Length: 200
Image (cartoon, rainbow, N blue to C red; front, side, top):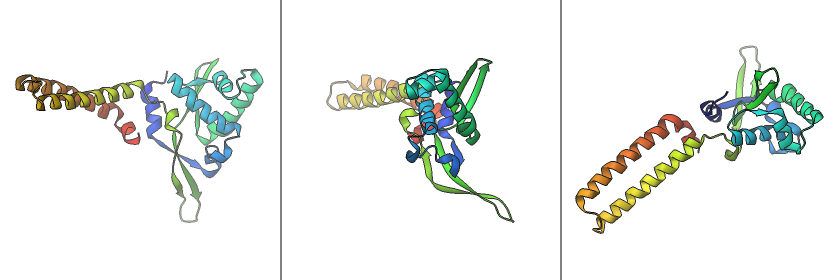
């Protein structure tokens, strides 16, 4: 099963897409089924923190889960989104197929063929799906909340010492303890989620 680290790595990478494929992401395509599939997979993956089934995608888009709707969505994924490299199909068993986005950040590119060499031209800024759809592990938020709480506690300790509420010996002990905890928490965030922190 795909773990949270794999999901997080999909956030940090940037996927190059040709102009023909990039159109599926743009707001001008929001009424197209392909656009709805992309955003449906993103939202479901965020909720489940795991690859999603065709039936779940169909139900999230149309509130229907019949075979015909699933077949239409499956064909759109196979013929458009998988070919473009936007959606990855994962097969766990003959009757257990699930889907994931390959990335959450995309770069529109144009391939330029010439007699000298072929090159790629990047067009515009990097496009990001809304951060609310990113599969960010819960641990990132827990560590972030812990870091904030420790910083606020240290401010309060300093304030209480300045006003004479805490004696010097107790102050130095608390300072060592909470600074150590804060350093360890920051190390954990940097070692596991540094790239995500930069993006958020």
